[in-house]
Image 1 (cartoon, rainbow, N blue to C red):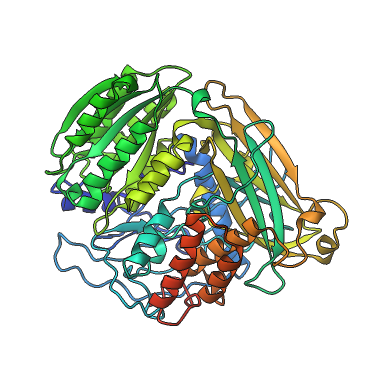
Image 2 (cartoon, rainbow, N blue to C red):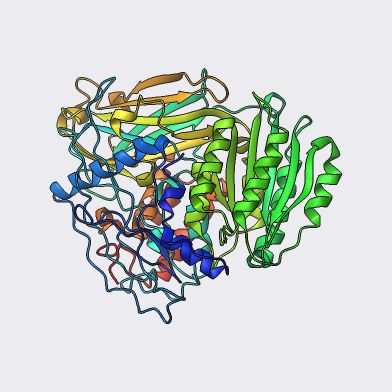
Length: 615
């Protein structure tokens, strides 16, 4: 689930975070001259977003980093829609408060290599054009009826995947992702009366928020489910769904876990939707544990504090009492807190057990005297020892999504956002098995499109999970982990040739899934699944309900993130599709209302805006 996490948090953004928290800002590097058109925009900080460049690269992440530059250039060369430039951000009111906006710095994109066990690297090209800097408020073309309560929130725009020609590049490779925070953040904003900024929308986290009821594997850790149907959004196109369902593990069979709760108790966490909701979340998580599990608790604010040494769940009352005593106030020193959390985790580090730090914060952190490079090194060292890290986000107004997502990515953990007690129950009670029981590590997916049957394809989402095709079998390249019961859904927008529609010949789509065992062995296993001709439904209405509902979710995310490929897609169509396909599950029924609410906020204009970054 990783992609160069903290190295994407550029020095200037970190400086802004530090200044906002009263800390000393690290010196920013001199930006390098671009080799071509700008790549995906850097994080949007609605209070401070100076120009920024990636600070450093982690060796394990080279596959993802190299995967960055190849892909976007081919989009440029293939004539993908250019994205309109936007007005520059407003002038900064003072030197201490840099202007808001989106910078042009971002993750490079890499073209993929040809099929084979050891593909040769392709030529790395310049990125495709993307939106120029602009304020993060919703575009004027979508008449939002309530102001966006963003404050000093920050998000990163990873761009939009281009259309690919399988005759030139038949492979699509990405690391698995089970994060869900982006959908929860967007839902909160919509319910609060504002559309989310497009930079906050990560399509894969919308898709993976929902349980589609995929069948569990009969053997091994995964089941792969392939299906396709004519697209309800574009004539002549099909939507291909690639779904991976992880096995479910009964609680009594679960591996023992040793958790360290690291809680941000700084002043920014004082609001009821932060510290009090965090405490409720921890109580739920604690109640989900079983004999043999342990919990430690530490906090960080102006200083760090060990609240509870590693304690067996048999002393649950002592753990719950320590949680109940937590209060918020003071400044923020996240780095020192992370150091203490890992120190506590090492006390109960047991080979063959799950060892995890769980960070609960709004992400608005002064790292203190330690640089972000040092935080990255600390997280990587702990990860190599077998201590993973997950992040749980709270609050709004000053929320730092970039920080929270990338800490979890680097820590081999997952990232969720909690905006209500119901959401806390969903994450820490109903779906807690995915956090507590890892079933596979370094999971990569490679989808091959046969040019004899496929004219073009485009992956919706996973832009910051891209892996170079040549690194699919490079087991030194870090990828994503998947927990018990987790499912992963990817949607491709494809154009099929007549031969594929007739069901003639070989499979038009082949999926390879590569992973390592959850503990111990670094030997990777590979699974291959071919799409049967009968998996392509003759009409959209004849497709399985799970594919139709996932199509609605994909369409919603494409519209909200202002995808240039979804300019004619309409929220009214999304609502209609979701209403017809939704199961009785609460999250799917709620989705229908969220889409309807978004349409109302759009003031009657329910299609995607003309271009990303257009005001």
